[in-house]
Image 1 (cartoon, rainbow, N blue to C red):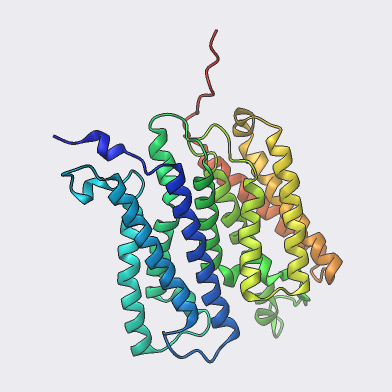
Image 2 (cartoon, rainbow, N blue to C red):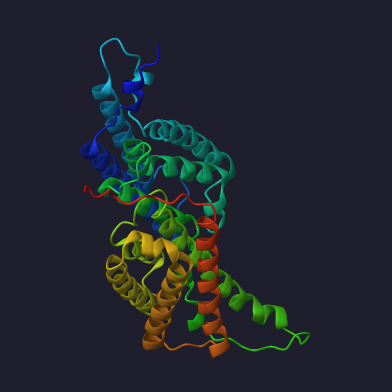
Length: 353
């Protein structure tokens, strides 16, 4: 007979939160290793202090997960059945991470150390990233398992998990981050189609425009996930998402004045947006989700552009920077529309008569 109670037993809010604190260790170690690859180009070995920080974090997380599983075990119960709800993905992520680490070591010994964009798209690094994604998502899976068929409640561990997973996405997409590239701060030379040098002149601003769209998606998709099965998004979600998407990559790549000013402007706007969101209830926000996300995206980039303008000046013509804001807002609205197309309406709390 299947032990249903054992399968649905949770690790507990305290254990979930400790697991996510270890996730902070792992994510910061990832960015630290990225910083080393950017600023210490002479790295030619797998055995570095930064890799040690990452893999020691893995060992600590694996040890803690083993403790959580062991404490959850009933007498005579197989360990596989003692894994708390939501931690199956954690165990899988830890196993995959160990395998990917061995493969990464072999990759570096055979093919050498990646030094640029190739480091972010290396297959072994992508497998490491997927493994980390599973580990960092523990808090969300556990909270969802606890909710059962009821509306999902955002616990501190679940919110931290969302932030860490978004931060990991920002790491792997740092090469197309609008906060790192700050495209409007780079002069734009208008070159007519067909004239010599047109392609070379258009490529940087085209990549800059694409970076706005991709960074918008990186912020808006987890923001929309905050509504997934929940009565309302967690408080402070816009500020948290902008902070991890902007400041972690900037700390890794270097805090240039224009980039830092742009990130500060976007963060300030996100704080204001969170204050306004907190004044509205979940059903109101859900009914107007495309408009809410469009306005949020527009305000974030308007805040960034204001910061860049104050720090170094805007080099793009108005048609370019305003077009980036409008396109980003449109993308945010489209994502919200798609996410709510067939979404289940989450009932609010019942009031006893």
